[in-house]
Amino acid sequence: MFQKHIILFFLLINTVVFSQKKYHREYYANGKIKAEGWIIEKQKSKYWKYYYKNGVLKKEGHFKNNLETNYWYFYSKNSLLEKEGHFKEGQKNNWWLFYDKKGNVDHKCQLKNNQKNGYCLLYQKKKLVKASKFKKGRKIKEWKDFSSFKKENNLLDLR
Image (cartoon, rainbow, N blue to C red; front, side, top):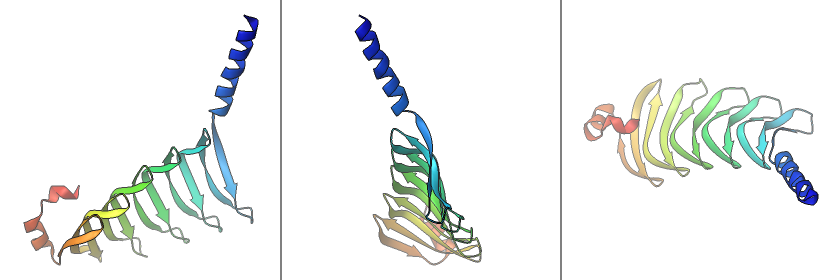
């Protein structure tokens, strides 16, 4: 009876010790932080941040079971937002926004499994100038003005 309790105790301790979440940090050879985030059962989980060698934030977002999930942000080496969007099980999905060097939206696209799948809207000087529709990465239609785009499409599809 006593032996069973000891074995059960050690099994319980192993489960608790090895399944705990730990905050993990990785560093470049220059000593600057490269990445930081949570590890649960040897897999990236929860919120993570990655950095360039100069220490500037490169990207940030969530992991689940070692795969990107939810919303992520990506930055240039001079700290400007370059793009942002949704991941689902490590694949880019839903709307993604891409920015120009001034921080304005350059274009935004609907993605599914890392491919354009839905609408892509192109902006210049903060105004919509062109729209395209994609299916599985292939362009199937393009509009060069908003009025013709609006006539042929339900704007609720842009949600």
